[in-house]
Amino acid sequence: MTEGLAHIQDAPQDHGTLDLIARRPDVDLREILQQGELDLVEGLRGDRWHARENRHADKQLNVMNTRVVDLLAGGFDRWALAGDQLYVDLDISEKNLPAGTRLAIGVGAVIEVTPSLHTGCSKFRDRFGADALAFVNSPEGRKMRLRGLCAKVIVPGVIRPGDTVAKVG
Image (cartoon, rainbow, N blue to C red; front, side, top):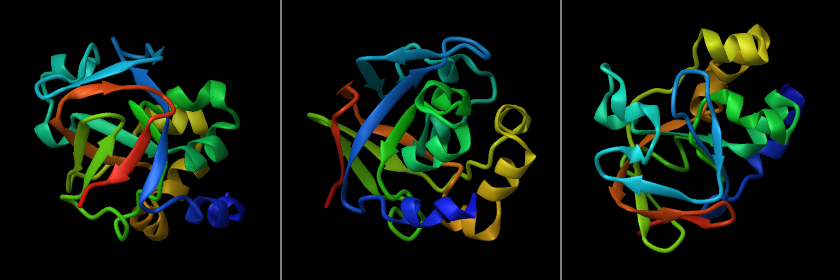
């Protein structure tokens, strides 16, 4: 897996692309969306995050780098199994996107990177393997946020695959 680090590190830093939106309507279910609605209360409208008892406002959205998920999943058709809602071709490392960084998506929607950690779970391990979980949670993997980042909606809006994802300010 370390052979893919150079490709991951070459991800765009300021302007990237939203490559996939995956809504999770229920446990272990995924819906690939051609259009999603980001909402201040629900996060991704229709996603089960809002219905969870242990939801945390800083974890409305999970965002993963598409270069990482492609390496681990072995193809686009398995990306959504990672369990994130937004998959972006953008450098999401702590260095590039510290907590508090805002990202504009498409025309008007804005999300904010939160300090909450996204480390993966037993489902991630079961789907991609123990080596993949260890890789994303290694010290370097955590700095690069290989497992992804947590975010919250700041400005609601409609988003679509292919939309630009850009740092604000």
